[in-house]
Length: 206
Image (cartoon, rainbow, N blue to C red; front, top):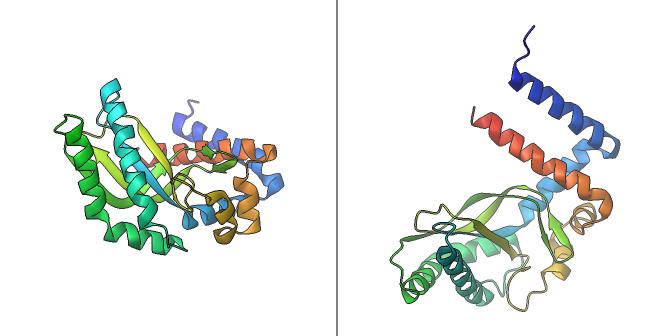
């Protein structure tokens, strides 16, 4: 009997997922990962293409956005406050991106908005965030077909003079904080979370 490849893939993944995670509590892991996503606000900059010039432009736009963000988010104490500040300053971020693009001799369009973005597992210094969808400030340059750049706006892990690692304890629970601190025992779980997110996206696209 021929086995449906989709069913086989689902079965294998579920078996792997349960085998690795059940011992440490699947529901606990999911709860902690979702709690992290709910408390973090990120920046997502997407280049026009993967050409060297477009990638360099992406980083220049990033630097300018981060410089403006230092003042915009300086008084934010919660993710909600950071999102509100970002919404109110969308025109500022848009104008900043446009100026950098023009200064570098390009005529690309640029879009700046708030929304959901999918991120892979990412380590910032000693902090690792699980893969998944996060609320983010999205900056899309030109066709938006190039490699991404992402970081954390709140808590401010990637802003100049950031002290976000210390501020993480203000917004995350003890369990969530332990998870993001990158203990070796969590490495396989982060990998599993990322693969599970990728798996869900494949299922949605079918």
